[in-house]
Amino acid sequence: MVKSFLEIHNSILGSIREPLIVLDRDLKVVTANPSFYRTFDVERAETEGVLIYDLGNRQWDIPALRKLLEDILPQNTDFHDFKVEHDFETIGPKIMHLNARRIYGEGDRTQLVLLAIEDVTEREYYKIHLEELVEERTAEIKKLKEQLEAERAYLQEEIKLVYNHEDIVGKSDAINYVFFKVEQIAGTDTNVLILGETGTGKELVARAIHGTSLRKDRTLVKMNCAALPSNLIESELFGHEKGAFTGAQSRRLGRFEVADGATLFLDEIGELPLELQPKLLRVIEDGGFERLGSSETRKVDVRIIAATNRNLQEEVRKGAFREDLWYRLNIFPITMPPLRDRLDDIPLLVDFYIDRISKRLGKSVRMVPAGVMDALRQYHWPGNVRELENVLERAVISSSGLKLRLEDELKKPHTDATRLDQTLKNVERDYIKRVLEQVDWKVSGKNSAAEILGMDRSTLRARMRKLNIRKP
Image (cartoon, rainbow, N blue to C red; front, side, top):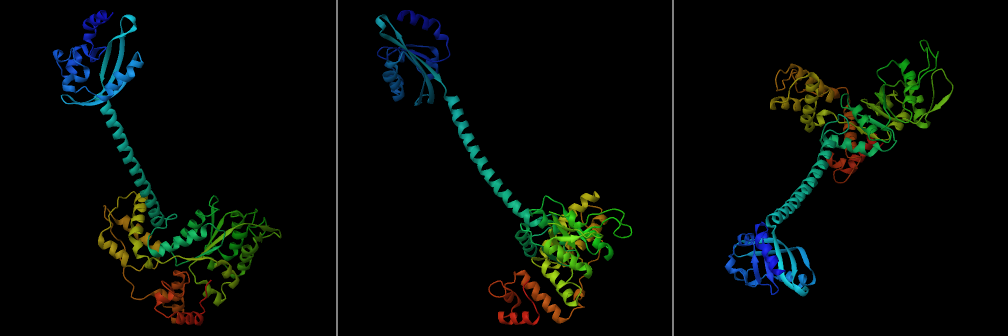
């Protein structure tokens, strides 16, 4: 049988590309195929009759090979894919899969061992390299993902500060304080009074409060108290029945009923006629009102956000605004700073409006010359952001290329015309109050009103008493 096997080996298996070696029962080489000699760079005369461990100056004395031939194979007829890694002196490192089989002679005694050697060095190196590459790339991806997430969080904070809530653009301390106040009050149902000069963006603050409130799924209902004649405001606010007055040909719901469960924004609240203020006060207090032409009391759940460019406290002193209504509205005041107090925001506002206006007008204005930006920053902006937007729209219209060209001649004011009609006492009162509001009515200590004004705290408290300045 052994002779027959060797004949087959020499005639057929010799053409197989996989290295094959035949050992006797003492593990000495009987023969090998040409692929073995070629792969492992050995000569036939140096192998036959030699103990396999002594091949190539004992290069084949491999512990893993000994384990296979002396420990594992005697317990098995054959064994497949036994992995052996070894660094040969002549051919370098190799990774091999060994497949061993015992060939029996008479009496079931092992006569020969057939050892087939599969050289998987390149495949294993590629696999190892691929695994290392995948691990390396996975680590890079993980790092990039964490970086992107961090950048995303950072950019969200930047967007929140720079393009926070609708079209409120800015990152100055003054506008950030407004954002802070909005976030403080948005999640409650407390009524809010937004103060500020014309054109500062009071409606945008109202939208921001509503948009982050529990009522955000409902529409923000708006009404400008200065846009209608006094005889129509009551009907707009509270509604009317058919025939309630001349021209009332059908029943109409007022803004309070439309805003039931939502938010009602009353712009220019300082223009509300004095005779209607008690009715508004009643709705604020208990949610009840009657339509014009009806005696039926209706109940609504409405959050009110009011806005004005007037000094309501002064209007109260003049008797033009009810004190009790002012107290009801002034629970949480937010003052929108004028643009002259937000100079750091002007470049952001300019970029924002130029981009929006250019897209709307189909223009390609992209660049703002340094001289133009300086002129915009040095102007006092009595009309605030609204005036800036109008100036920029005229500039975009008149610009024919990529550069912005100002159409308006912006001049610095020689005097503050908005203060000429006020007494020194009123100017002092307004300024101290603005500083107190800026520091959340902190009179003394670090970053307090007394520190900003350069006054002793007792002196400041005395001035507040004299000027009748009280915390709302």
